[in-house]
Image (cartoon, rainbow, N blue to C red):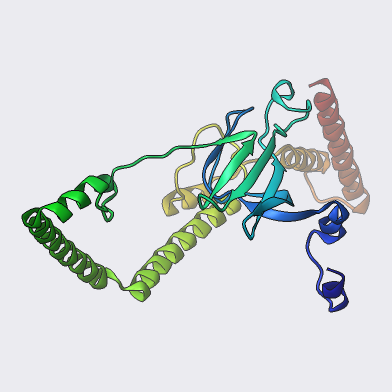
Length: 281
């Protein structure tokens, strides 16, 4: 590791990898070779799950070294079921290599899940069992019949595989399917953007009932309707007061000034009346 660091390479474990190297323990990434079950939390750990494991040499089988891998279960459980009262199970797993049987020995904390299946259900190659092989060696006719049945099955499987490959080749148009999917997605996205833009322009709804679409005839009728406000009423009252204050015959500038003053006073009275009515309401 020191040599690799001098060359510019650094393990992702860093110095923790060789922390206990003086004791013969090396920190590695261990991948579960098969599906196992934790004996504490009963959780199934699938094949290929990776753990940080302590690797240690524990013996020799002739000239083959025996290695032991120790790790902890990382399944989240109730603290009462945990090995140390934490949020994880933390059951200690110990797995040793078994070169005698070309397998792994589950030494502590877990057991192997036994999975059985039928070759006919999985449609895989069915190997001859010891009894069938013994009969084939002892009976030449049985061996010929078995060979013919295997040849017929192989021929049928090859024909079926050829049909499937031909069907797949007919349907395999990756570029066309991709173009069709992208076109459909673009149309859908543009429609969604149009609806979002319409909703944004409409703004927040002001009524509890949905509004009908706009109509040109309704818009023309709405333009013809005029609503009078309180300010227009004030102007009308002021003009009437000014006309009443003017003499019947044409007068001088003094009479016109009096009429303007009367109109202004009437306008102020109307304004004060509106303010009082608004405050009272």
